[in-house]
Image (cartoon, rainbow, N blue to C red; front, side, top):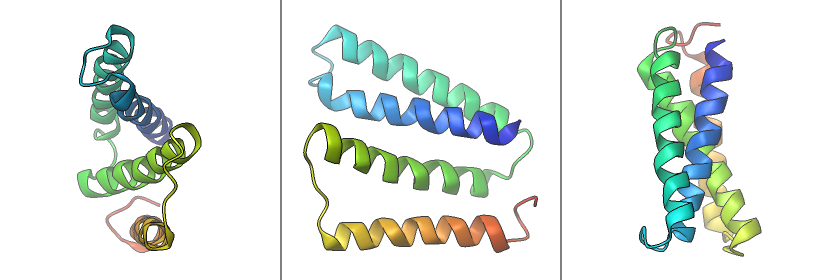
Length: 109
């Protein structure tokens, strides 16, 4: 169940982060509420995940996947296309998270 909570936490964080730009520095109510509620849900779910999974591994997966998903959202919605170095950097982040998750003894398998 921890991985379900982690996936939902990542989704809530990505939605909240993506709404930051639309909030226009918290001057628009709708997107601002999405930011606040989204981060609240994300952090609550993260506390549930941390009951079973190590902090470092949890945060690596959460931040790594969040970075990739926010970048994809920015590319699709805001037309903020990453260049080749950005794509390579994202690939290294995903690779690092995969190595940590698959091969580290800190992660329950």
